[in-house]
Length: 603
Image (cartoon, rainbow, N blue to C red; front, top):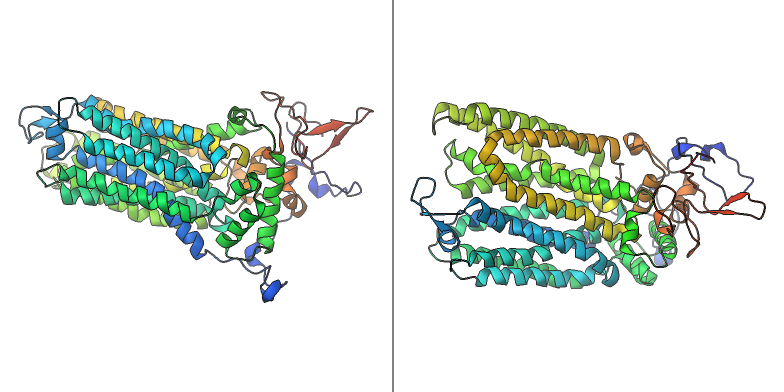
C-alpha cells in the first residue's frame, strides 16, 4: 500500500496533520475569489482584489479559438446532407433502378458512403498524432494557421473534383487531407484553451469547443437545407466553399492572440507569459493570483529542463493510467451513441410524417446546439464527475426505451400507420432527451477533463493519444454502422446502452474531480493516488499548495526506469516525487515534501 508524507523544510515541524494518505485532515485553502482588497499596488490598484468572472479578452479568445471546433462540426454536418443531394448522387453515386427509396436513380453503396463519410476520421487520426510533438516544438499558436491551411487545401481538392466514374475517390482524398487539419486543430484548440484560460472559467472555456462543434453541425444543416434544391453543383459546392470562411477566421484571428503562457514560460519568456496571464485574468501582473500561479509554473518549467522524448509520456508516474483513462473517455464519448441518433434520425422522423431528411437534420442539430449552452454553464458551476456519471445513466435509460420501442413496435409497422406514428413519436422524444443529455455532459465535459489531467511536459503528446482514440472510434462507427444496422436494426441501440453503463463505471471509479483546481494541483492529485470517489472534497494544506510545483509534480522528474520501479536521476532542480538521496550512512533524505514508496509502503 502506498504511503505519503508531507515533509516540512523545518525539521522541528512535526505537525501530524501533514502525515497520512491524501492528508485528509488538511485545511481548505481560501479562494482568491473571496478575498477582499488588503493591499494596494502602484496607482492604487488592488493586488488582492476579487478576480473578475470573465474578461472581454478571455471571452473573445474563447470565441475565436473555438472556431477550430466549428470547422470540425461544419465538415461533419455538411457530409451527411451531401449524401442525400440529387446532384451529388448523380456525380458520385452508382446507377440503380428508380424506386421510392432511390427516386433519383442513383445511390451510394455501403462501402462507398462509408469511405466518403469515414475518411475524414482517418485523416484526423493522423493529424492529431502529428500535431502534439509539433506544438511542443513550435508553439500552440504558431501551428494553428498552418493546419487551417491544410484543411483549406482539402476543401479545394473536394471542390475541384469532376464527375467521372472514379472521381468519387477525389472526394475521399480531399476529406482525408481536410481531416489532417481538423485532427490537428482538435488537439491544439483544447490545449491552448487549457493553458491560457483563468482557473475559475477554464472548464467553461474548453466546453466552448464542443459548443462550436454543435454550432458548426447546425449551421451546415441549415445551409444544406437552403442549397439542396439546386440542380447544379452549387447544391454542395456552396456549402463546401463557405467552409473557407471558418478556416480564415481562425487562421488569421489566432495571429492577434498571444502564445500560451505556459509555452512562453517553457521557451524562456516568463515576462511575456506573466503579461498574457494577467490580461486574461483581468488583474495587474503582480496580483496575488498571478504571483501564485506563475510561481508554480516557473518551478515546473525549471524542473522540466532536459531531454524528454515523446515516448517518455508512456512511462511517467501514473501517465499510463491517465493516458488510458483519457483514451477511454474519448472512446466512450463516441460509443455513447450520439452519432447513431443522427444516422437513424431520418428513418424515425419519416415514420411520423417528416419525410425531408434536411428538416430532420436541422431538428436534431438545433436540439444539440441549444442544449450545449447549458453544458458550458455546467462546466463552470457543476462537478465534472457527477455530471458525467449522471449523464451516462440518463443516456442508458434513453437508449433502452429507444431501442425497445424501435425493435418491437416501430420496426415492421406500415408507414403512416397509428402504430408507426405513436412509436416514432416516443422514439423522437427519447432521441431528443438523449441529445440534450449528451450536449450538456459527455459532449463538452470530456474535452474539459482530458485537457486538465496531464502535466505540462506530456500534455501535448498525451492529448494527441486521447484525441486519436476519439477519431479512431469515430471512424469505426461511421464506417461500420451501416453494415451493423442492416443486420440488427434498432437492436444496435442495446449495444450503446451497454456502453453508457461502462461509461458510468469508468467515470465513477477512475476519474478525479478537477473543477476549481490548477493544472499543477490536478497533476498532484493523480500522483498522490487520491480516491476518485472522494476527490471532489479533497484539499491540499496551505503549505503544500504553495510548494506543489516543486514538491509533488510529474514535471520535476527525469525518468530512467520503466514499470512500477521508476527511478529518478538528478536533473534541473532535482526535486519532485520519487526523488530520494542517501547520505554516507545509508539514511534516506528527502528533497521533496511528498514521497512515494511503490514497493513496500515504507515512509
